[in-house]
Image (cartoon, rainbow, N blue to C red; front, side, top):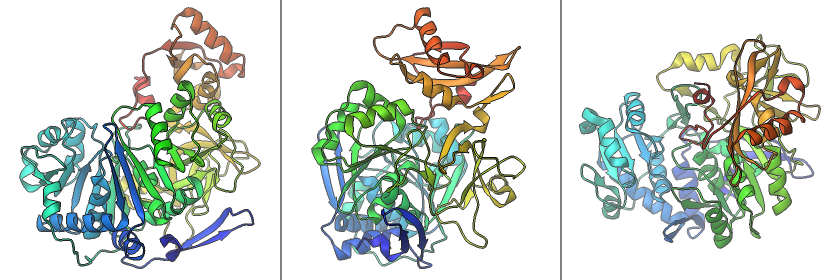
Length: 542
């Protein structure tokens, strides 16, 4: 029996599809003690983590090793004066230290604040100004320590600074401190509704927001891991994400360990599709999850045989149906698309037991009641566009949803206006109950009296082999209000000239209603993205 079954009751239909799930957990539930240590006590040699990097190094960790290392790290933090409720920033890339450092912070009740190593000094300063940090744990690589010191400035004396593996001036060496620390740790007092982690949003819609989750958050990812990614007991799950983003919580630790799967980690800086597939085949990965960008490059560069891979999933941006079709043709595996936000766990997905619908976000998670709403709170008719909202059950706390925005209660209240959680994402629902993404409300194009979602135009463009990446937006037009413009990154071997521009426009416009026609095409070597890899429409519009 997997450890998660101690905390939930599942209802399944005859096909094994999840139809309902209820959770029951103690008031002091803590992932570190009640999951990691509990598994270590039952099956100490059970595989927890498989790690490798581009230099050919590899490390394998059992749950008992994670238990002991997290205890040692927790003792280091306690000795340094870090206590329950203290925020600690963690910038560890994909280093294996992240897994026992995060568990250690959970065990002592500190608030883990993961950030990506790619942040600039100003990015870091913005985040540090938002809170009174008590500690920083970071990689020694990529000049991260130097940027941390520059950003911290006068705050540094009140904040303990650690690097891992190598010593850096101004920082303590956490690796050495852990080696010298005691292995036993008495259970520290924590409460399930204490803040456990805070992620900053990717900033596609303005300044990043600090999103707070409590200690019940890991449990909601049982649905993410088991019924969407289809991680398996004693399997090996591989999610392509850096630990500074909430996607790491979705695919690299909580749900996977709860359902008994080990986690595969590949520590790299520059994305190479061939390297990813080599890792999958060398270590025998059984389930895989990556953003659409990875699948786009895989389908363009060629997909090798991956005999151990049984499940593939995607989220983070909308997946173009053409990419999904090519991946499935080559591998025989359907791509299971899912949807959620930093503020939530998985909301919509093509779930285990479903026949996946290519291009669709799928159906609501049994954990939530998901509806579409108009601006006035009414329900749109079937096929009409509305905002995706979460409708909480009366008097029931919604597991897996954020508990607040850092120092911004009014923003949190606004997100819950009318008693529902507003995602800000536009979609429509078909007669079978599937949801179809239409874009952020801010990104909708209003042209000639029609509303056009950029995603539907991007889908058509992506069918042309000359298009590696594209982004569609509205630009001012005196006749239509807005004209539809596409920014295109050409695939290798194609010349960005007027002939290709005409070819792409003719190709796309022949496949769409006239009001969706592309009027302007601009070629670019790259499309602006946030540091999380999402296309930044705000930067494009500017």
